[in-house]
Length: 371
Image 1 (tube, rainbow, N blue to C red):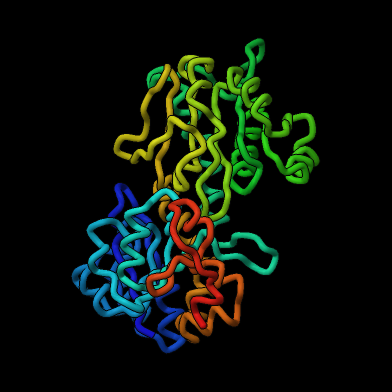
Image 2 (image 1 turned 90 degrees about the horizontal axis):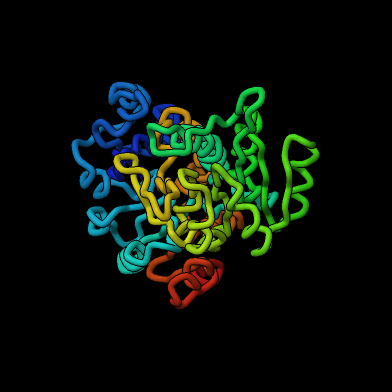
């Protein structure tokens, strides 16, 4: 198969879909690899490294789109790329379609095969290609929150760890999955007082077993959220419904009741955000203030640590990509039903229910679409 990777064009997105080592793995398996000139620069990878791995360097993105049967990216195609997507072409990347109707329409119209990293499942039913970015985003959320709590950044002037005689910062983590548990790990390590909120009792029990009295756990109800948010210095939005829009746990009514200069880091923004106030921001302009609360809603947080996140992502996406390249998409789906879960759009059909439901569009199960 002819596979290709591009220089990402989303604002301050420095990751790349293929590392030189991954390009070498495709090449060794007999596939042809095309790489846009400079695609790996944001991670410190040179064109010469890709050439040494057996890849062919092409000067422009449109050249890669034209040559490749499978495009391997990091972030979703943007509007300027919609017209480059071909019928039957495989687009293998994070898609996050639930809040993005224009992209849904573009992928459907192109009649491509769109596979979303974030909905692929492994044999345990987990989300292996989403997990590493969730772990990174959760860790970053605490770093970012700590920075914006500083007074020069507009925050309350609170140190997460406190000092003897002064209270520790109050952190609320909404969601106890990969993002939330990673945020808890860093928050506890920095000495904050942490409350984790979730509807999954097993996840709360697991975190309590690990951290004991270092954290508090709280079952997620509207009443409990009403009570806990006004006490928070930092709130991390870490809720996830795979492939679907995030539930709005933080209502507009909550913000006036929160501390002035407190911070919300909405990691769920890729799926529309878990706060009614949230709107996607960029690394260029990462925050906005509403009712005295700082809102950080950058949609590609892991792009800030591009070397770490590119390699972590490649560790999980490579095996699936090699299977697709070897067998073809349809045969790979039939061999691995977890990979089939990643199929969101197939030749003009929406094959992921969460996406169809988010936009009120027709849905056909993936297994029926590929017959």
